[in-house]
Image (tube, rainbow, N blue to C red; front, top):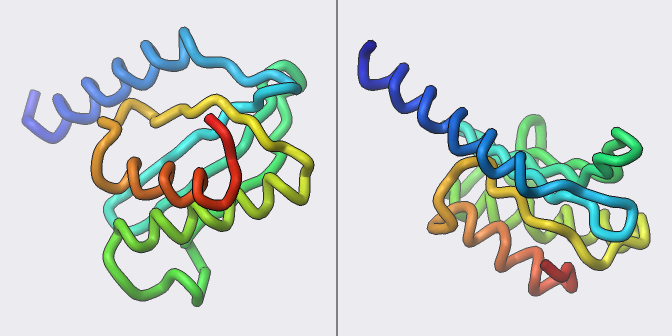
Length: 119
């Protein structure tokens, strides 16, 4: 197994381990984060109803087309918090998607907290 496949396998194992413990409810939906090589996405999901409440991505967005990936992550964090407020969601459970809480993930979380999202 080459190193790239091993990294993907380990990320999937970490993600599944986290998802076994973190679940979104109607009171506290799950804030799921996905970061690729070029883009950042975040969704607020109610796992009991199997429904996505709000979603934001940098794909196709002119506002987040420039800047570093950390700046894009901070933009997504602010936007997802704004959409959560319109959907009347104030508290969420954070799902970092198997990634370390550092750098881009931390930038997204800090921006969401600044806009009033609690987790």
